[in-house]
Image (tube, rainbow, N blue to C red; front, side, top):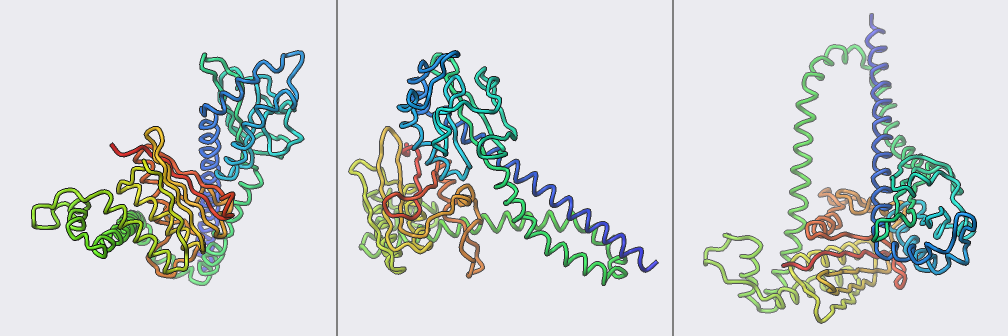
Length: 412
């Protein structure tokens, strides 16, 4: 009778571990499917990709397929884009083919100009494909999306894949985190089986309530951390305005970001130039404390509203915290879109982590304060998304470290 509770707990712990592992694997694969599908769809709709493929659509015929030389102009235009997307998004490969399935781009130059080995006919007929197939790089979970010309004709295919070995490595890392806890639970369950048998019913009744409460606490904590992060950035702006002697602009800025806080009925709108100057001075001062030099290049027609300045401050601060000694920030406005590019000479971003760095709570650095990390880049992504924009993560070609490009619509 004493052994029976131990057997039950051991069995339950083993089943729970198995279910957790299965859920973890499903979550990883679902994330990869969304990743490759999103990248493939974005590239297939990119005008530069469509125009380059259309330019070589007549280079081959069913009886005489195009070769690498015939496709060379399109390869020269598209391979740099494919290589950039591979590095920035963390996918294993980006392949673009013509309407006969001949590769225009491929990470391996020897495969360019060769016909793909996997089934592509349904995609050339206008269908999308997501699944696991084996190609020159090995077994990959891939998405294939047709490239459609302006007149509605399918002129090629974009295929984006992540190696099954990469997915397996992610799964192994997740299991490596799970197994020590599972093993400890098994040992503890064996030693305390009798005690557990007395309290398990009560624990089960409270489990749902505790879990719901924990989720609410986590959501609230995350929201407060993000608000505190933004508040700290705005305080730097206020300090910069005060140090410049712009008391009136400082009061107007406080009224703008916290309506009703002051009792004077408001001081109007802060001068955009004063706020921008104070923000830049605050960022430069903060980076200087950590020994980081800031090279700020702002186009004459650049629109520096509060959200653009928030993006600049977070990107520059993140680069300094990553160990960069030199940070270059470029701000330009073109065709109703403001682009902020921040490059540094730091250690850069591991391509395997490129699709994680914008996730709130993820950070390559330990949290020594206990207040949470991985907030700044999440704020940047949210800000850009709310303005109809996006964030592209890559590597700086000139400074050698990380590079982040943020695009968003100019504020109305």
